[in-house]
Image (cartoon, rainbow, N blue to C red; front, side, top):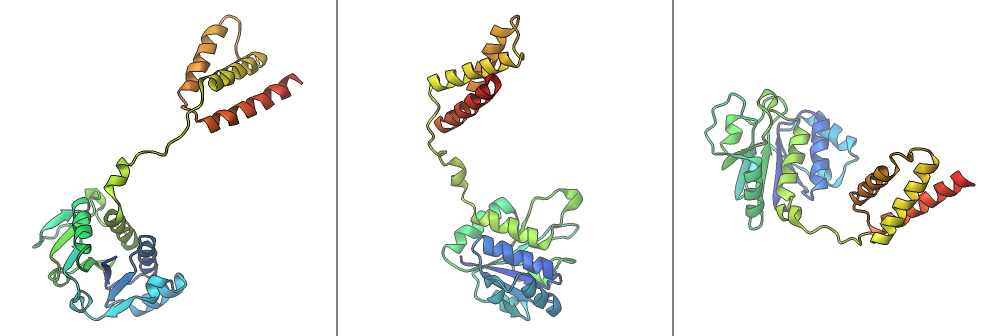
Length: 235
């Protein structure tokens, strides 16, 4: 992927580790750290057994150095009470814009420190800002979670939701009727179905079974189970 994840002044090794794992999940292997708290960085490498992402991570003294090779720089923010001087996009639109740009040039995605987020100086390197649409009462997210959510949105393919479901073979009508009959016999034997309500209950069982949209494989399993139950009850 043509994406660089830049963590600015991270201090919690668990967050660094979680961000690295999320990056590995989505195939983004270029992690860059700016002014990282040294102890936290060392502990993070130990916590996730020095995985590929952390082994290849690079440290920089400034944001300018970290994003020097990028054609697009996007900062993340929870907004809060800050007055922003940059265009702001929700994650859905921002993610698609990043994905399009990544096809032709490197893109940097910046995440600020756990306590303060990105500073005004950090944001001055950004072309625009992106926010995750959280509720107003709890705007900020955990750093590792924010990285995972952003990478998911960038990586996902909206067309996949429209893909045709896997082709399955529906159960045949005669098999469904065998299941219905076996259910009826078992329920009668258990005295769940009584003579007065027998016919209406029988129809309810048939309708209920049809609503399950069983596959042929499901039907074979049900027939096997019901035959065994009937044999045990009547033997």
